Image (tube, rainbow, N blue to C red; front, side, top):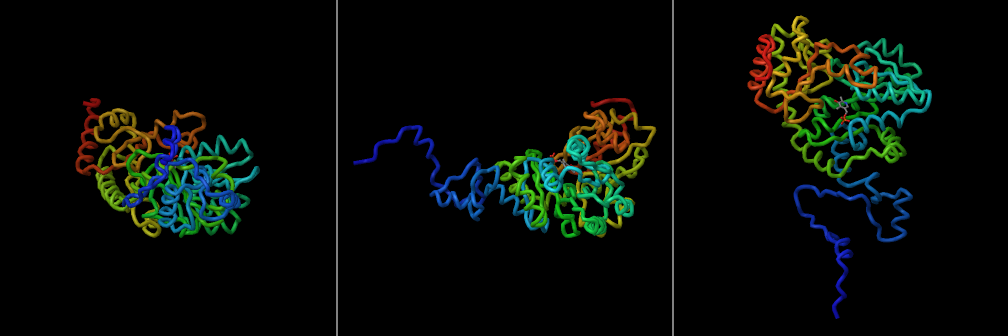
Length: 399
Ligand SMILES: *Cc1c(COP(=O)(O)O)cnc(C)c1O
């Protein structure tokens, strides 16, 4: 006698019990929970036994695939994926803080990291002091009693570098932990953990994903630092990375080497072109020989990426609106790291709430314009900039 036919609701609930697993692309474990064969298995998982999955706010195999790749590239013991760069930064920072602790932070830090420190952590009795971290002696003087030294090399918008090996030694001597935002260089061009940092954080929304279709983050670090994140913050703050976005990240990272080589080369070409323009007063690009920390760059970095800024000469600062509106290949937009070229005028950041925001706090020049150089042909991008300069001066807008 055949088995009685199951109800459609039962059939649908068991569709896909059999996995088909010979594809070259990794499987996507888009599941919220994992089931157990027995009480004993489940009990073992809850007691922290290895080899079990429970719930995707904790571990998920697709997310772990991304985490292992980043840990390996950064030379870290482990890595943890997050729903955004800010979730990674929040968990990394908060896993090391208690009420009354102090943070020493580089000036011109990413604006939302500033917002976290200045407007949220301050409510829990955490004070943050912002220092010009190109001045090693100043950091040494201010680090006493701090719990965290928070760095970002290069800094947002201004692109200044920090001496991570020396600052890490100074911080560790003072009992502080070092966290470095490495989104700009990616582990291909800079490895702060090898220079002594305890934790590296990334916006994986940028180069790691590379296609402007993912918002994600990751923290990589020493066994202790990642263990502290796992113990509490990862699960209870709940900013976990979704399996689908982890899957896209694994896919995107396969081309990271070739994408970055192109961004690097094209951005240098565009930066050199801008250096020749009479309307431009300064170009802030760590890979240019006249950058103030060019020797640090040569020592610690093996390449530059596609993001940098320039300052319009004072006489043309009021024309920035016309300039960006005249660009056709550079889209006006935040973020960066995708295939497309973008322009971001720093003056826009001054209107962001709540006050003070990073642009006003760090007094970022309203004449500063940030460019992300995408994967387009650099001569086309230069022609676009060329005609925008002409239209800016001619008083015409987007044609
Ligand atoms: C974008 C960015 C972040 C924040 O990452 P999200 O993924 O947007 O949360 C952090 N640091 C730097 C340097 C960034 O550019």
